[in-house]
Structure formats: C-alpha cells, structure tokens
Image 1 (cartoon, helix red, strand yellow):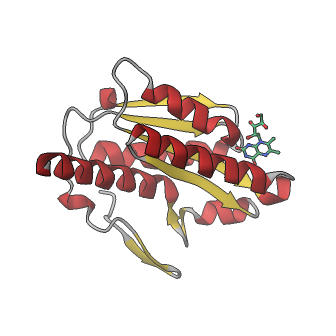
Image 2 (cartoon, protein in one colour):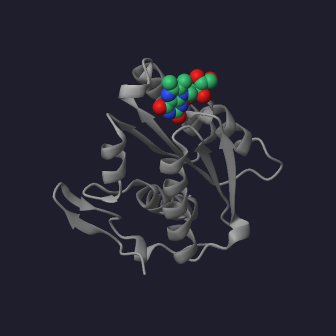
Length: 172
Ligand code: DLZ
C-alpha cells in the first residue's frame, strides 16, 4: 500500500489526510503528461495513477492526454474542460530541466500561469505536478527519493481538492 506520507530529509511528503478522502464513483480526472524528459514523466504518471487507483478510482475515471512538452500542458488541460462531460480535475505532469532549457523560466511561468488561469476560469482544480529542476538527479530525488514522489503527491492533491469541492457543494 502506498503510504499517506513519509518523513524525509526535507520534511514530510505528504498527503495531509488522504485516507479520509471519500472517493466518489462519478469523479473523473484528466492527466496531461508531457513527453519531453519522458523517462521522468512516465514515472510521474505511474506514481500518480497508482495512488488514484489505490484510493478507489476506477481506470475508466482516469484519462491521459500526452503532449510534446510542458508548454503544451495548459491548452491540453483546457480541452479536458471542454469535453461534453468535462473532467472534475486535471493533473499536469512534466519535467523542466534548467540546464537543458534556455527558456526554462519562461516555460515554467507560462505553465504556472496557464494552469492557474484555467483553474479559476473553469472553477476546478488544475494540479501542478511539473518538476522544475536543475538536473536529472534532482528530478530522481522527486520520484521516490529524498524529496518524495511528486506524481503521487499530485494525485493526493487532486483527491483532497475534489473532496473539499464535494463538501462545499453540499454546504451551498
Ligand atoms: C524546447 C524544450 C526544452 C528545451 N526543454 C524542455 C524541457 O526541459 N521540458 C519540457 O517539458 N519541454 C521542453 N521543451 C519543449 C517545450 O515545452 C515545447 O514543447 C516546445 O517549445 C514546443 O512548443
């Protein structure tokens, strides 16, 4: 079983209370995964899906779009929102490596801004699981190493946001 969180050198990586999240069978989650730095992003997606399935989502509640690089993540995320039956949350997964990417900061900023704008416009969570690292070693530390597993954490974040949304809908 994937733990709710674990202590590492840099703190607790985490889900504050994922085991309390009540997963609903009507939830649908879209994953957008960038293929640039593919070995890394495949592991992000693997960890992300593993958590979603373990917490009770079915395969048919999760759909993945693959995009060439991180820059394409926001537009593909918006496509998930304009489906006939839009997803309830999007999880964006990618890896920007500063040493290999002269316009690293521009792409990182564009992805952040794109996801935040979309999230507020569509009023649904767009979880940012894009690694911004200096090199592949730093990326690996975030794939189950000293800095936790960012794919798993992104899944926990989406579930917690959907749970919160369910509660706020009940309260209105
Ligand atoms: C061009 C580029 C570079 C240099 N580095 C990365 C990277 O580290 N991670 C990533 O996801 N994408 C990279 N890209 C591709 C851009 O995100 C984008 O796909 C292209 O600029 C085409 O729009």
